[in-house]
Figure 1: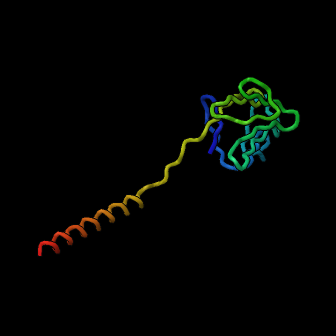
Figure 2 (figure 1 turned 60 degrees about the horizontal axis):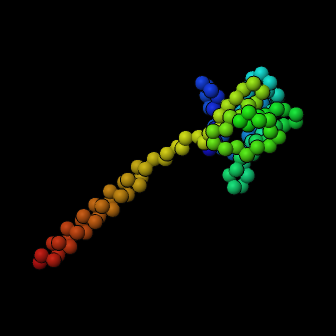
Figure 3 (figure 1 turned 60 degrees about the vertical axis):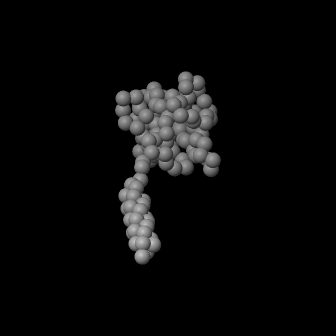
Length: 125
């Protein structure tokens, strides 16, 4: 999962093949800011996981201060859509619960303890 972080504001997380950015409510990320067009840019994820940013039409998009027609995004890039500058980051991972695995481990340890106890008692006879 990836995200764009607004300075001092919320982050927009995304996990998909295409992310459309612009003023229009039909975009995946609605960014109402000075200089942002109704459909300003797209981010596409290729099968290898590489993310490519492309402006739509004649929109101006800058990556690390340089205007681009296409750019591969890297962690920490400063991306400007109109007057808004955001940072590109990997979103923090969401850890799944380990309760089931923990329960299974305790059951295996209990079975090992019972097996060893039975073995000790069997060998003492």
